[in-house]
Image (cartoon, rainbow, N blue to C red):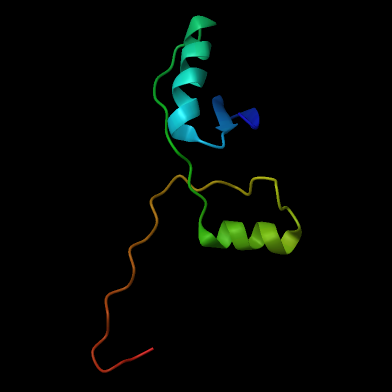
Length: 81
């Protein structure tokens, strides 16, 4: 775990390898008396990452987006990019 903070009553943790580290983190929290409702992944939008880079926030987390990424737009006939 590289960082952890509480935001709106939720624990947000940054880990390098979630598949390997999440089970250990959850086990340690439960052993310490925490009641885990669920574990989820926060994904940043491309815009969030870009703005963090432009603002010089590299290494810090931009505002996370919990929504799924939008699907690509449907192709328009006769238009080529």
